[in-house]
Image (cartoon, rainbow, N blue to C red; front, side, top):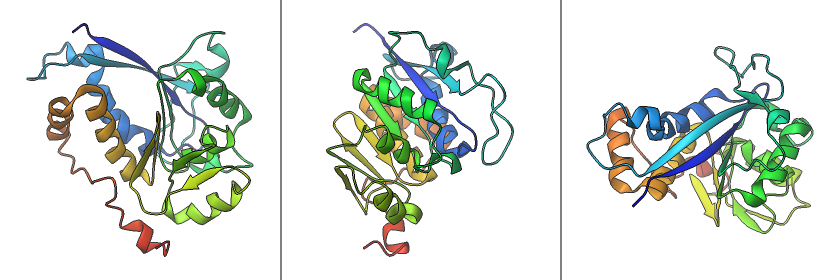
Length: 224
């Protein structure tokens, strides 16, 4: 079977949650052509991911914590007709309904219909909801802000799932807090590249994956 390469847009913005995207990208990064070519895998890899990190400007992005981030290109640099296979939206302080950067909302709204997959971690679901990607779908988000998110988007036709590490509805994958994002990423790698590849990566990074409904924080925050 011929290898498949999927393009990935990582949507960055001021006050993005660094672990929200770095956790999943730790796993996705093993599927880049450059990493696979290093010969670290003892299993066959037929699916590759080519990430592009997008920023509102080309200036370094200040995340919620940690060092500043340098984007590959801006949202405005994405050419007319250029379609990413995967659109990935992390969370962070900059995702609330009335604070989400319009350029990010516009990009997600434009790209989502043609994307093979749309993923969010934590409050990245707010951007998906604001861009009308979640209309008619089941989804979840960080449980500490779950009720606020439900209230903010009560005018949308979204079935918010209270107890779930992550939720898959069609081609849309949403996850709860930052650690749940890594759980979702493991399941996503398994979906794309197979169990053996996902398990090989999990063993390399020594990551303990939770099951989809193994969500202790729904009870912790009084949602169930």
